[in-house]
Image (cartoon, rainbow, N blue to C red; front, top):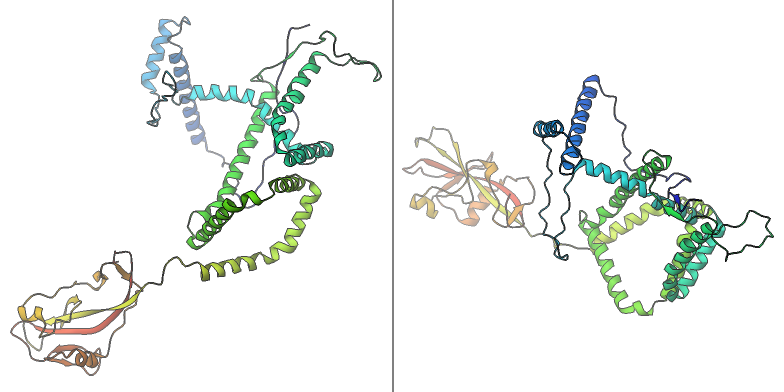
Length: 458
């Protein structure tokens, strides 16, 4: 009889399933590659293998493995031809909790490969536990699920029993199975007595990693592959549901959620000691476990399609209406109007010359204006697109209105020395030409709305 009996923790039952989430992105299979791409990938793979070989030989060069001088020279040559790419490391402070600073190795493809093999050979216990949990909560064996539900009921009614759970788990799931392996029941009829105080009849069981070329190793790889797909699908689905209402892309909705959570937190801070937590935990436990039953799942899906889906859009529209009326983030911006005057002049001072565009100015530059009397050039821009709103304001829209009531404007502001066109665009021009260029203050009345902004005009 051997001194020990080796065993491997591996999921030999059903494979770990992958979760199919409606609307999630599914991986697209690669298209067939051409001969040139296959040759390129083959060369890249050969180069990577050479790098791995160099790393393995270089890392073992300090050990006394009896490498010849030729092998060492070849290794140095490959290191010069194929330099290993370094990955930028994070500049983290050393761990001062230890007497000696902990040095963690940088990324290395051979080390990563070795760690993955070791990890995959030992991860089977996790998949065995996951498979048993899925069987328990999916009611594969109703007696097991009801027993677990009874234990949860006792713990919810008497939370002090929670301290017994790890000790009882060690007794029933570790020590008792190990003892039964050392003292197996006799291969006799059922009415034969089972003596538990006799000498051990079998060697103890030890746990060993799965062999790299064994079926258990590939079973672990299969389950690890499916778990990675499950995590990626759940991660993307969680972000798709949680991120839009919580990242303030829709500020009214995120503000509403923040408001409700703040009110609930304040209420629980005051009234949490008054709530029957044991009853709440008991009901929640029963509901969560009962949801896993296939019949209840079919009932939930049928009621959801019958009662919830028809009213989902109505409830969403009601919530949007309530948010738009009751959640006010900013007051309505103040709206004002601005005047822009188009100034034209006739070069040469002759009345027969044509009017030429000159500037767009905030002032009319009439004959009695201070700038005109002092002979200063009017302030403004040459192109209409360069007209900017005052500081702290922004344009409300892009539509300008041409003011055709030039006569009323001249009378209201008591502008003298000008004449107004009766038809057309109602230009206001100088009545008598001055010694300088003949000017025409073009009160085209381009009026544009402007609103209070963030201090930057645009």
